[in-house]
Image (cartoon, rainbow, N blue to C red; front, side):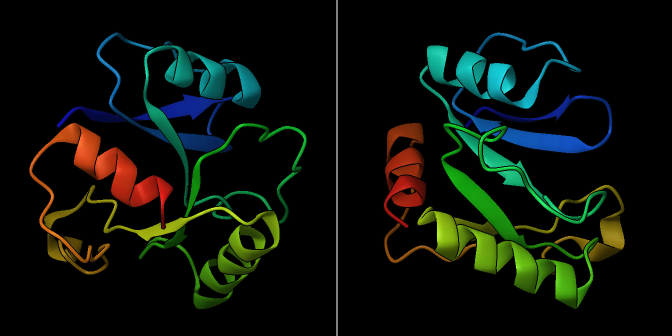
Length: 129
């Protein structure tokens, strides 16, 4: 299943794109990156959204589909605050290991209630929370 992490606006905003086939260049604005993901039929997830910043501007993240609220590279407080934002914005949440180093593989994950065997099922499961 295709997925990629895109750096928007430098290192300060990372967006997971699930379901895109064509490259989306890095360092675009957050809203433009999300729009380009949606143009390809993908979903946009804020990856470790508070790792590099203290707040998220809701207007800047317009169109976001989901927020990662459990990430081993974030502090417990950052993960809790990301969860509060997801609840306040009424959008789904996921967790992931964000594996850049093998020892953390599987540390955090998203558990689904049904088997996911294709991209459409994955997108639907994430979008419906």
